[in-house]
Length: 231
Image 1 (tube, one colour):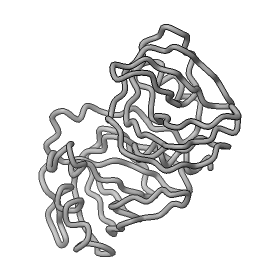
Image 2: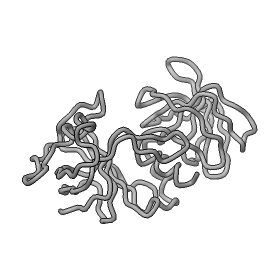
Image 3: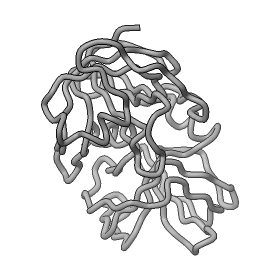
Image 4: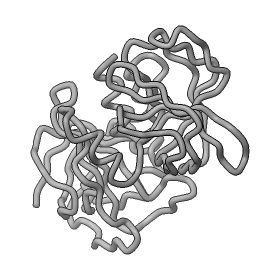
C-alpha cells in the first residue's frame, strides 16, 4: 500500500492512504480550494474538513502542520466514494485526495523518501519533436495509445515532475507543448531506471503500455514503460 500511495502521488491520479481501504476513484476538479474547518492527523497523513465554494468536503493529503482557519489549495484532486478510514474508524461517502499546494505541501513532502522533486512551470513549454525511427509527440502517444500499444516510441520533452525510487523505478511526467490540458493529452507518464531532474529536456525511448494495472483498482490508460533517457 505504501508503494501504491507513492504511485498515486506520481501520477496525479487516484490516491490511496496506507493502511486504509481502497475505494473507487472518480474524476474531480483538478484543484480544490477551501478553508480548513477541522483537522485530523493519522500516521503520515492529514485529513481536512474544508469549506469550499460548492460546500463542505473532506480531503486527505500528506501530513502537514495545518490549523483550523487556514486557506488551502489541493492540486491533482481526485474523489473517492465510500472510502473507509481504518485509522479514523469511519467511512466517508465522498473524500478528495491530492497534493497540498504551496509551502506547506513542499514541507510535508520533504521528509519522505520517494516524494516528487519540485515541479516546474508548465505554462510555456515548447520542445521540438524527436528525430528518428518511431518518433512521436506526447499528444500523438496519448491520442493514439491503442494503435501504439506494446510498440516502441521515441519522444522528446521536458520533465515537469520526477519521483525517484518507487518500486525499483524512477517515474516522471513529460510534456512537449503538444496536446490539451483538458483531456490530459499534453502529459505523458514515463518509467525509467535513469536518473533525471525536473526541468530537464530529455529524449525518451521506451514501450507504450495501455491499461497498466498496479492493483487495487489503479489502472492507467497510457504510459511509456522501461524507458531510457538521453539528455
